[in-house]
Image (cartoon, rainbow over all chains, first blue to last red; front, top):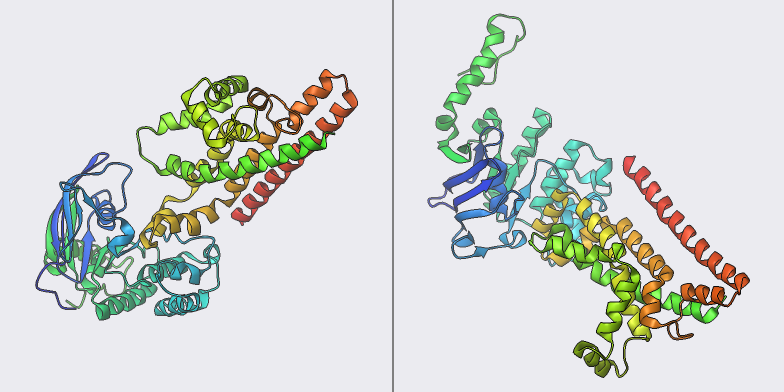
Length: 261
Length: 223
């Protein structure tokens, strides 16, 4: 993916959320941006703000959210676009599938102006992207955690959102599955030029996806830039952890992911 | 048993339940998800019939709907007859008196829906009405059933309000519970027993069905 010249989203927000004060100001330019930071740094709150989901802990005291020239939120001017009108897909940490609908029903839920048969066909198409087509007739309660996440992803992508937010949706999935899902997802988004903001704790993932990284700490942007620059310290720490046990020969016999460098 | 009173009671309960459900769905939604500071006040108003003597409610309705107030005179002009001592007056009284029995289960049902499921629906739906009809209402159907059953059975069993506002006019405002009262007043114990037994069986069987359905729902959810 190549970076567009101008930012597609400008975010500025001040919001008190319990003990956390979210005070964020940044621009998103890269099609695949990773939001990185410790737990409680405000990553999920920032995603919710972009999606337009209200927080029980407080509303933004000030701020603006501009997406491709359209103001989605401006506290000063009293502008607030409802979530469904933002055209932003959101995959949360928990899949939150609709339990009374089958998988195809879940995936087709967000499609507008599409008849029944076309809705199902489109749902199957989206499911096949994540090798989940055979699950179409099953109810969410019969699915494994990984299957539910793939369905949630297909559901968020089906209406072809203008942007995708991912809040650690692959936590708990095995590495191979995660890698294959991510590869399909990035390719699909790239073909359609749909940018994504992805919350992750995984340094390797940030490097692998060649992402622009925003590091959030205590509710504020600490750093922003290419993974190689912004996460250099995290990468070193990871390498030391991987090399440490191998050096004394007790646990690791294979090479770490960065051992060739 | 007084057949006329039975039919009138069933008609009153059906009309009241229908109106109550139409009111309780938006009101329950607002109580469950609204953030207004007025919420505790509205909750208190909705719950008031649970603690208020029915005669108090009946008394105020009689005054408000009667010719003593401009509102009552306006309603008389609108309907062509005074609402007190009429079937329409009974419906108004029953709706107010059974309001918490319809609103509270529905509000609790909305409140029990996983917040993330509701948010996922809000993100994908073209309107809150679609979220309501395709996601929330199907998910709270057991709460809806509870509300329907409680509103219906509570209306069938009410006495104080219908007596105050309706006066127990045979064929017009005399319901089964008033009919029992009249039968006892007339020392017609056999007939009163017959009517009471019908009401007791109806209420008991209905509640058993509701609890049985709820228990099987829990088993299904646990599987």
